[in-house]
Image (cartoon, rainbow, N blue to C red; front, side):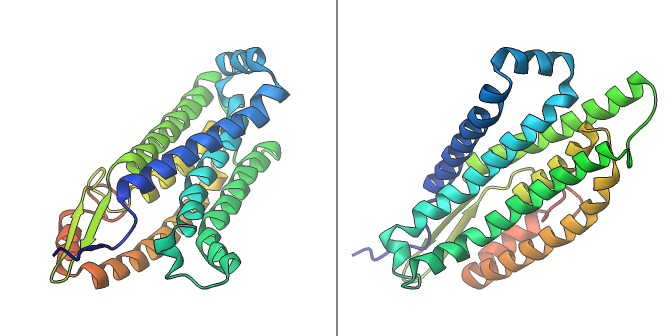
Length: 249
C-alpha cells in the first residue's frame, strides 16, 4: 500500500493561483485607473506620444497585479482542509501571518513609487540634458522594467518546485529560472532599478543595495528551512545554481 502524503500544495496549482491572482489584479487596476479616469483613446494617445508619462498608470496596475498574485494563493490555501489542520484555530491570526509579507511588500512598493515621483517633482536627482539623453535613459529603464516583469511572470508559471514525502524517502525536483534559486527576487531588483530611470530620476537607486540585503536575508531563511526538510537533495541543487544574481551570486 502506498502511504505517500504530499508535503505541500501541488506546485502547478499554486502557480496557476498566483497567475490568476496577478491577472485579476491587472484587470482591476486597469479598470479602476485607466478606463474611468482617462478613457481608452486618451490613454493610448498618451502612451504613444509620451511613454514616460504612462508610468504612473503602469505603477498602479503593477502594484495591483503583484498584490493579486501574492494574496490570492495564500487566501485560498488558508481555507483548504489540509492547510487548516496545521494552522491555529483563529482564522484571522492565520491569515494575518500569511498576508503580512505580501502586504508589507505592497506598502514598500507604493512608497518606492511615491519616492520616485517626489524626486521628479522636487527636481532631485533628475537627469538633465538633451532630449536624446533623457529618452535613452527612460527607454533603458523601460527595457529593464519589462525584462523584470517578464522574468517574474515566467518564474510564477514555471514548475519551480515539486516536493513529495513518502515513508522512507524525500525527493526534491526543482527547475531553476536563469540558473537562480530565487528568480522572483532577481526580477524585483531589475524592475525596481528600471522604474526610477523611466521617470528620469536616479535618487531612488540608492535604496537598491538595502533591498538586496533584505532579499538576501529572506532567501537565506527560506533556504535554511528547505535544507532541514530536504537535506542533501537541496544542497545538491544549491551547488548547481546561484541565489540572487545570475552567474555572480
